[in-house]
Amino acid sequence: MTTPTRVLVLNSGSSSVKYQLLDMRDDSRLAQGLVERIGEETSRLVHTPLQGGGAKREKNGPIADHAAALKSVAEELAADGLGLDSPELAAIGHRVVHGGLRFTEPTVIDDEVLAEIERLVPVAPLHNPANLTGIRTAMALRPDLPQVAVFDTAFHTTMPESAARYAIDVETADAYRIRRYGFHGTSHAYVSRETAKLLGKEPAEVNVIVLHLGNGASASAVRGGRCVDTSMGLTPLEGLVMGTRSGDIDPAVTFHLKRVAGMSADDIDVLLNKKSGLVGLCGDNDMREIRRRIDEGDERAALAFEIYVHRLKKYIGAYYAVLGRVDAVAFTAGVGENAAPVREAAIAGLEELGLAVDAELNSVRTDEARLISPDYARVAVAVVPTDEELEIARQTFALVGGETLGGVNA
Image 1 (cartoon, rainbow, N blue to C red):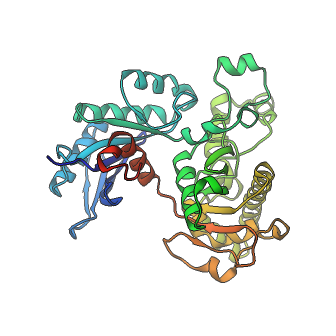
Image 2: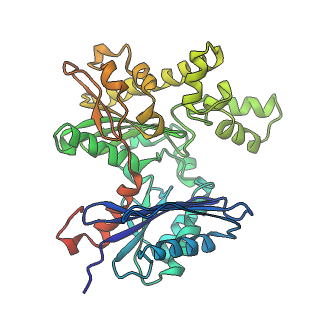
């Protein structure tokens, strides 16, 4: 009898599905792809087989809904001999953005779990509905297969109440589930562990500040493998300056815009989430373009960069204080992994905290996890490529199949 060792990871957005198929015997990727613009005439599926030398395939044309999208994904996988009906498929792992306080670990999905994810829609209106659609579609395709939810918020549920609570009326906060949940949790969990490995230590021995810097950006303070603080809050709006989100802002700005500018709640929501951050400051949210403009003497781009880095420094300093002892600062995600000037500027001036960046090491471009701090630095500075799909697959397999292989990856 074949022992199932494969996990299909699905990340369902409102009009897209990202997927990867992995073999958990060695964490290898068998295939990956993206379906985008679901529901439009210009839908597109890009599928890449990663074993056997197969070529990338692209299909263009209308894909009506997520059910049709996943059917197309199944067909592409089957064409490579990796169909969803394979006895080697152990489970499907789903990224779910918001799990509230109830879901603190990966969870096999049943009707009760679906209902709770739906109850959390008001605090994650852009993400949880799309995640639910992907789950229900996958369950219809393979009702016999374990479906596992891996929650972005789960890693942050270890925060103490002193970090998670907002200083507002407790009864109001509890009635409407208002507290700091944090996001990007699968990335922060993966990167904090990989940073410990890079230092040759166990996660329980290491205190790490993780800086997940992409279009969305967040920081976390991780003590001994457990999150004790993170920058995003009730929603992904709080915290660092991001591509299109403002990050931290005086709450009274919203009242001012309503009273003085006559803006509605929806108008303010769009402003702070989609028209702020780097794009609001200089018109661009691509750090590569911003750096190009700075090199050409663009003052707006330069100011946007300075504001971005200033907020980053504030969080590094704050989380240093929270942790008391820091063993490493780890940069990850698109900007964190690729923008050497951001890393250099964020660490510059923090020498008294034991932090420094070696210019030559920082300039190296590679997909490997690496240290970019000089040997004399008291605190390591690392670049650790994140791998949320692998983290979801590992957590999924540990839950449904880990014992089969004697605990491998558990």
